[in-house]
Amino acid sequence: MIGSLWRRGVAALAALLVLAGCGGGMKIEDFAQGKPELRLEQYFAGRTRAAGLFEDRCGTVRRTFTVDITGTWDGTTLTLDENFVYNDGEVQRRIWRLTKTGDRTWEGRADDVIGVATGREAGNAFQFGYRINLQVGTSTWEVRFDDWMFRIDEETVLNTARVYRWGLWIGTVQLAFRRFPG
Image (tube, rainbow, N blue to C red; front, side, top):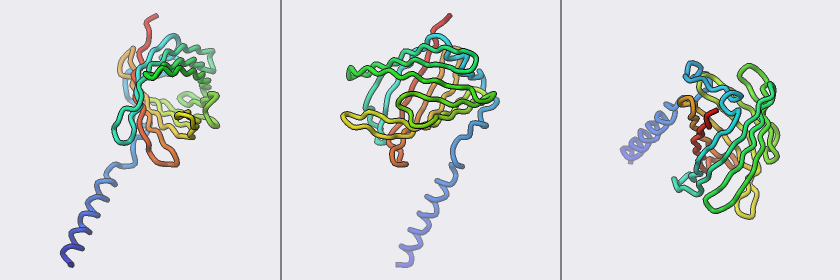
């Protein structure tokens, strides 16, 4: 009996130490020296195309999509006109208005976003957090996105967004952005 309790206690302690070793996740400051630098107003001005997918927490790919983006920068606000086409035929449009609030800070608004999205850039990275009303079948879910973008080269940005509902992780959106030349 005591041996069994001791083994369970050791296993629980080991699991706790493994979880504690994660160190609280990424911080935008960790990427301050990353190259090439990601400046949203430069990268997204003009035309961009992305391809992506949504994978649920069990690892099942639920949807794939493409999105064509036209970005305009007026010196203060970056407007991103996004046109999504999903593998099931659904078409969706979202217009983001991202306002630069500091040298590397942003606020964002879109019709389906709840409140104000906030984001920060550092080096080759951008972290963006927001809540959104997401259409799921015939229901609307309020979910939270924790978006991380990383500039890989002159044309490519990779984006991973963890999606949460009621504080629980429900899946991940992965996107690869490719900027059109000129």
